[in-house]
Amino acid sequence: MPWREITYDREKLYKEIWEEPVLTVAKRYGNSNVGLAKICRRLAVPLPPRGYWAKVQAGMKSRHPPLPPFKGKAVFHSKIHKRDDNMPGEVEQILRDELNVTISSPIAVSDPLFNPHPLVMQTRDALRSASTSEYGVLWRPNGSLDLRVSPASLNRALRILDTFIKTTEGLGWNVSVGGHNNRDTFIVVSGEKIEFGIEEKVRRTEHVITPQETRRKARGEYVREDR
Image (cartoon, rainbow, N blue to C red; front, side, top):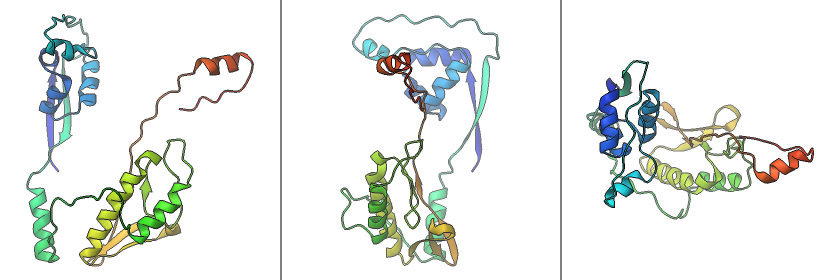
């Protein structure tokens, strides 16, 4: 996949950020609002406070701070993956010409989970009583599908996997769980083993001690301050 270089000019970015919402500007750069906010902090570009654009839409006049002095480089270069729009067509052509397969697009995920695949049902039952790791992700027992998600995302992940497995097996490719310690989830296509799974990204933050925990610490009690 090709790379595309993005240039962030400090003064230009400052004008854009205060003329339009961060999300709108970020899309133009091919970035996320969180990613663009990080760039702004790196270049010392002040960001509009929460509620700023709501006030503007309501007709309220809001002043914004001037661009502060900055000793670093005023231009920042970043590289991102550029999507190849021809890729989906190439994949469909390979499926059609080499594997004699046609996949309807898009494939709808059922809601709620209805008549689940045996592997999905087995995984659901195993994970419902599973404990979570320090990252809040369910511990996956051996013999279950490769799912590494939080309890809140379990049902959604099961529905996605159920749809994927049923679609895959409808094309004549069976899904299996095996390999080392019976922990690999895979399909075999034309003799090629393809592993897959679903993993939820998590974000850890420092624990903010509560007033109750402060009082407990003052009494000499142990307070666990996990992230």
